[in-house]
Amino acid sequence: MKIVSVHEGVVPISSSIRNAWIDFSTMDCSIFAVVSDVVRDGRPVVGYGFNSNGRYSAGEILHRRIVPRLLAADPDALLAEDGRLDPTRAWDVVMTNEKPGGHGERSVAVGVVDMALFDLAAKLAEQPLYRWLSDRYGDGEPDDQVFVYAAGGYYAPGKTLTDLQEEMRRFLDSGYRVVKMKIGGADLAEDLERIEAVLDVLDGEGSRLMVDVNGRFDLDTALAYGRAIEPYGLFWYEEVGDPLDYRLNATLSEHYRGPIATGENLFSLQDARNLIRYGGMRPDRDFIQVDPALSYGLTEYLRIQDMLAQHGWSSRRCIPHGGHQFSLHIAAALKLGGNESYPGEFQPTGGFADDAVVRDGYVGLTQTPGIGFEGKAAFYEVLRELHD
Image 1 (cartoon, rainbow, N blue to C red):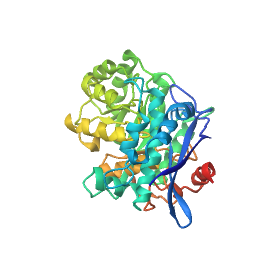
Image 2 (tube, helix red, strand yellow):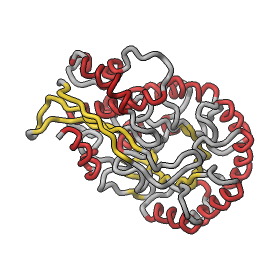
Image 3 (tube, one colour):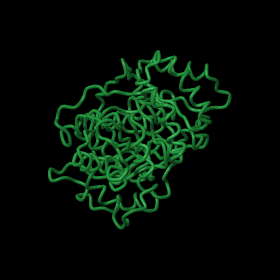
Image 4 (tube, rainbow, N blue to C red):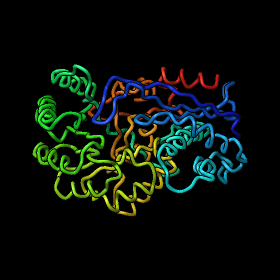
């Protein structure tokens, strides 16, 4: 197997919504295609990738550093001993001459390429990615369905409490059992009113509601909100302070007895390990949200999973950020605790296959070889335009 060509583009995933830190009016992401010399049904086998949501496109790093290294590599350097494509070997190639640290947007660019190579590897094996991964990195018996929650509850111009409640009812009517909303973009009194409005829709079941701060709070605010929301018994209190402020998170965990979730803005094994060492995370109740697409790809995510196991963490305490099909396959293969979902947002990249159905909070996996972007018609059209 040899790589014939690679193609990179940018697609807008903009929206009028906002969280406590940013709005998404100018959000975009990188898309990527790796064309192989293997031909089936008259067409080359192609692997696709993109960089999830929440970070902008990483085209400059791809153009100047990552892609040239991939194309200059000896084709055999990308193959395992059995002669098949091994994306983990490609990871070492594209990270050549990169100094330790400085993860940031570099991890996004590498993640885009890594995703496309895993898609390609599973397609060449004629397996859906979750089965291919389970055979190689799991126990060979992947989950056949994955818990998913509906992330929404954003702030938006003119959005009322009634609008918020109707949004949550739509999620429930679509088959979700657990929902998530944003807080921290208003004052405490207003946010409590918003939370209670959603709890009314959930029949007062706080265990079916997550709240997400997107890293906005200082310690005093984090503790004040924690005291106010703890009686609700929420599913989790998410990314309360700056993602690298491990002391804040550790102090919060000493005072807030409910589950805490964080990690979506940690992009390396080293950062995730520091969270476990210094962030006060509790393996009996808390959740790790590292997004494989943003954090140097699945290759690095596998290392993070090994580190977590060494520290006594179950893979079921990991629920990746992102709400996309790549993480869905990973969740099934590695037996994670679930996957995020953003119904209707961040299109065309976000979400699952067009025929995916959420039933009682769970969704099944596509049987299409690879990640199955071919089952997302609008996104697949964009991806094919990269190389056709």
